[in-house]
Image (cartoon, rainbow, N blue to C red; front, side, top):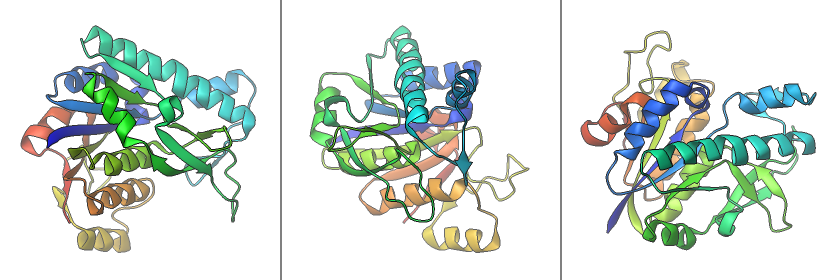
Length: 260
């Protein structure tokens, strides 16, 4: 079975042009088939401010009304996505920039209103892994912006961590999949103030203990929930690491490796 490396790159790296360049250079050097999912960083908020559109966040998640959906589509699916594609082309990676709507690759439904109305936010229903595999067979490297589509033809803003996990799980049908979450930290940390306090291996039991103790909290929890979900559903390896250490994570086990 072929191997496939799926990497999600976080917003803070996208905001830093030199960090992004280092990451993309490392990404271009990875062997075998690969796929990239990216967030949007602060660019969408900055663009919204310029257009006089208010940004509302609840527990770190963006409320996406129609004007904000227009902004994130322009920024994530347009500006950020195409900048990454252009940089990868310069590194001789034949990248193809996509949203979930392109070629019907990631179908979602609008999140139902419970305590909070998140607006035009999508929860993933289905990934068309056969279509993504077709692109890989053409020696293309898909670069996904975190935008999906619904059966009614609406675009939806979707969490990039969730999108990476869902794509990884469905691509297991065709490949042995490694999923890597890259961001500005060296991995999951015992002490958020100490960049060297990396937890090298994390099991579901340890994860529960660290959460109960408050060691793992805030934005790391949904990231790890998505990561463990991927592991439970057939993904061979899941790693969380610094964007500068992606090659070392693949080859030498840098960062935090999740275990069943």
